[in-house]
Length: 76
Image 1 (cartoon, rainbow, N blue to C red):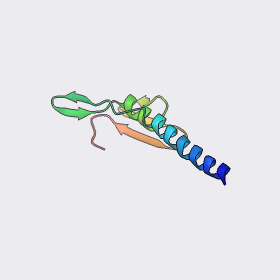
Image 2: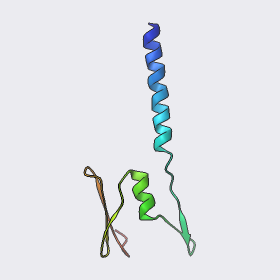
Image 3: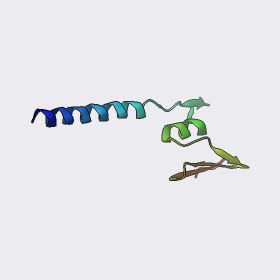
Image 4: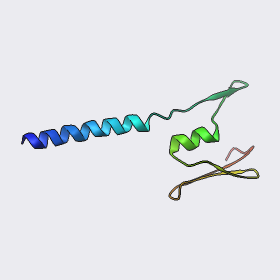
């Protein structure tokens, strides 16, 4: 009984510790003319993507499992 209780407490503690590590990357908002913007590098770090790939006006974030695409000067 005591070992099960200890296992549950360790599991809860581990989950809390991991959630703190994940939350370590925060949004770094940049204000330009009163509007809020995020850099692509900041978005990549927040979601755990490697360095972005830039091809002309397209920016791709891909980690082999998930992908995000941005188009410069677009609202998509």
